[in-house]
Structures are given as structure tokens and as C-alpha cells.
Image (tube, rainbow, N blue to C red; front, side, top):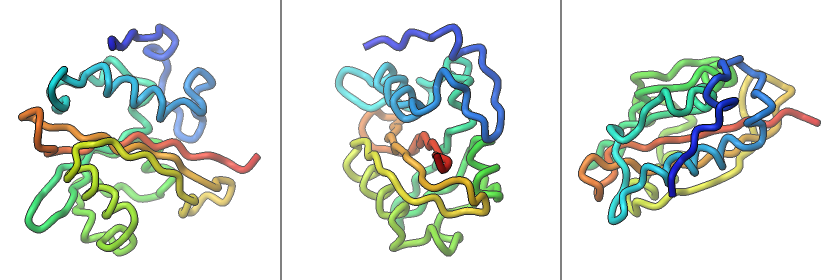
Length: 165
């Protein structure tokens, strides 16, 4: 499968809470499609396979996590601007275990361990927890990245938040 860059997708700018109409309700689908386009025939894509210039409209919705094994932990390497705005905190550089509501055995921590262990994507929907009362839920997909094509060493997460209707 080849990812074909949609001209309107590649020319959009990041606007904090306003998801561009061309990708609204499609962040997860477009993120997964892009990841699949980078997936190797017999293995997982690595961080080096991704070019942020391919998906500028999706960048505000990305979280990139470093994977540490033994003991498990995940460091926030990159957090998109929409995510930072909606969380009202920039956790870049912080280990997940240092964040009270994300530390084990939280659902997000457990999901990250599952993806890092299995090498399989995981999609979920959760209630929105944050300072913006007009948001009610979030959908995400956690995608494994592996420099060696086999053992996940990073996780790529696409997140879309949904406001009350």
C-alpha cells in the first residue's frame, strides 16, 4: 500500500483545537494509513521511515514515545500542539511512570506495554479528562516502530479529541 499525499492535507496548518475539516474525524484513519504505507513487507517500520513533511496536518495530533524495557516505561519524546493544548501540560521528556494518572497500572500504560510486546497496533476510545469542558472523548491508535523491523523501540500515537455536539 502506498500513501498518496492529499494536497489539501499537506498544505494545512496546525490550529490548536480547530481540526481542519479535511481531516476531522479521520485523524486515526489517516495516521494508520500512513503507518501502513511505511510498514515493511516482513517487519515494522522504524522512526527513520517517517518524514513529518508527509503529514503536516496530522502533526498536532501525534505523540511519539520512547520504549524502555526492564522495567517497562515510556518517555514522551514529542507531543503535538493539539495534544499539549487539550492536556494543558507538555510532558515532553517525561517518563510515563512519573505521571500519576499514567503510571502503571493505568489503562494507557498497559496499552503501551501491549503494543510494545506484541508489535500490533491498538485502537481505543476513552472519555476526555482535562481542563476543557467542551470535550467529551478521545480516540487513539498506538502504532509500534522498530529500528530493527522486529522489536518495538518507539510508539507512534495518533489522537483525536471530540467536542460535545
